[in-house]
Image 1 (cartoon, rainbow, N blue to C red):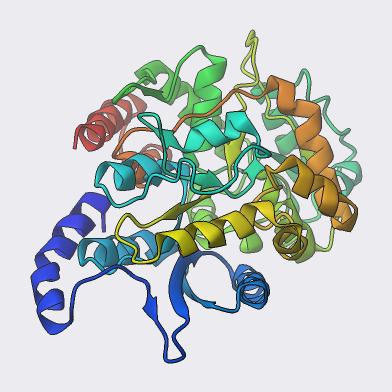
Image 2: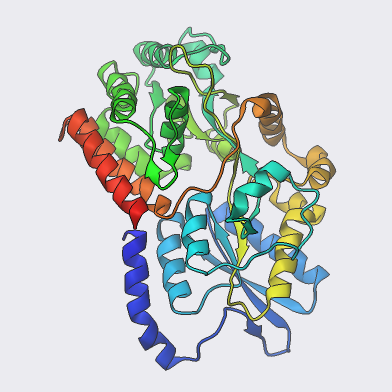
Amino acid sequence: MKPTKVWTVALLATAVMTAAAGCGGGGGKSGDDKVHLRFSYWGSDSRQKLTEQVIKKFEEKNPTIDVEGDFSNWESYYEKLATKVAANDSPDVISIEIRGLSEYAGRNALADLSGKLPTADLDQQVLTSGQIDGKQYAIPTGVNTFSMLVNATALEKAKQKLPDDKSWTWDDWMNTAKQVTAAGGGMVGAEYNYNPAWLQIFAAQRGEKFYDGNKIGITADTLKAWWAIHQQLIQTKGSADAAKSAELISLGPEQSLLATNAGAMGMWWSNQLNALSKASGQEMTLLRMPKAAGATTTGMFLQPSMFYTASAKSDHAAEAAKFIDFMVNDPDAAAILLSDRGLPTNAKVLAAVKGKLPPVDQKTLTFIGDVKSELSPITAPPKGALQMEDILKRNSEEVVFGKTSPDAGAQKFLTEANAALAG
């Protein structure tokens, strides 16, 4: 269900829900008079286990506060959250990605956290990405960047060299993928996806913005050139066919070609290196994204993995801020979470846990350090951005499956995307 429809349905249901139970924020008091907080988040089973551990550590340090983890899988997270917020039953602390920040802040669902917790040791450039109209609605959990992950051993078996990621182009990537598949052994050269981050990077290489104020800044020509990469990968067998690729996109990283040792290259967020490496049992290499011919920038950007926010209607604002403070500023929390929510943005915390990071996370840290000067700052996109992945995926599949022409698909995407941003 689209976010706008979720809000409408949730609002209609509010009267029924509030008639059956008293209205109020998510917090309360438990039977032993402790302050009770709810913390909503999404993720995998491994994230849920880590989060339960970090909650336990917080409660040990704050014996007057109980925290209940309100966990959902990614597919249902925002639908459930919108219903709770509309019904005045919001969790006290809410995990939100950057695409949802303007949406929830604009609906007065989030508290301004300015001055509510220490932020001096956080990366200030990253911190500003949690601001809307000068108010600090969100605190970044950690940072990552959308990048190319490569199984170097698979390339070597196919007699292909690890690319020079400072100079390689999309044509180089597609040619390498084609050669890996052609080498046989059941290995597919690359897998593509419809992540808006990839399109944002590709557009930036062509001098365009994904969002230009409250409108889409990408041209139809850029969309068509981006889809042409998908189509060429399929035609040259550098990737799986359209049907198989669509299936893989729906399954997520741990069942991707990279994770199952059936593919050599794929695009993922840098903090997913750990999960992909564990799933595959292989050593993965992080590379810069390929560039369009003649591009002067990689288009890559440093982005918070997600944010911690607090409900504007929480009965326990101080305790909610204290929990967020612990999650981003306490080395004990970082020692448990490590890179699960991105590498810590608190320089002192990162220094404290750096030696505890497993080798794969050390690799991520080194990569981000190497490319950080090349990464563009990121700002929260406008309302409606939560719908963008669905709109992009649906229109991309129509083009890639041959159900519509690239020209018609580009116009349809721009019309739908701009309508979503217009509300």
